[in-house]
Length: 176
Image 1 (cartoon, helix red, strand yellow):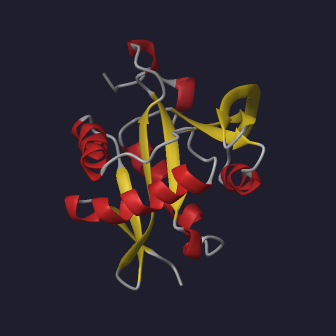
Image 2: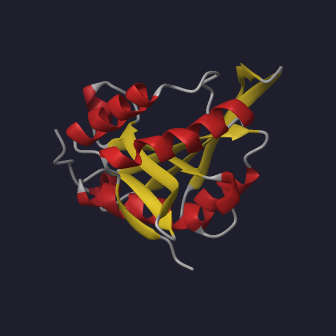
């Protein structure tokens, strides 16, 4: 069953926060070590949306089961056309194609705002499914940063992947 995808709204924050809290507490997809409050999650979403970035949710049977957003890859002006993606799926909904649907929609939404490159920063080891998801949607391996985070009693690295969006570097960006 294909999930329903739509822009996130304020009413989704509790579900988004639950999904993220599980990732923070029990996983390594995020390098945060304490789940943010509902107010902080709402603030983060509003900041991205206010800056024109997409923030999406996936629903199955009327319940939010995943979310994805893009934000600036880095703050400096020269990076303005490069975005970083984040995709989180509730544990019970993993393996159902929800992450793929969210990431595909996020790619399209970022092309619509004239982003030219999407970067994925994926935990290594332990996120082989995320690497496969990104590779399946056209991301290429761009490098590895070893032992850059320490969580759950072990050192973790990150795999960097990237994907060209729209015309990529073949034309100057319009995003300011």
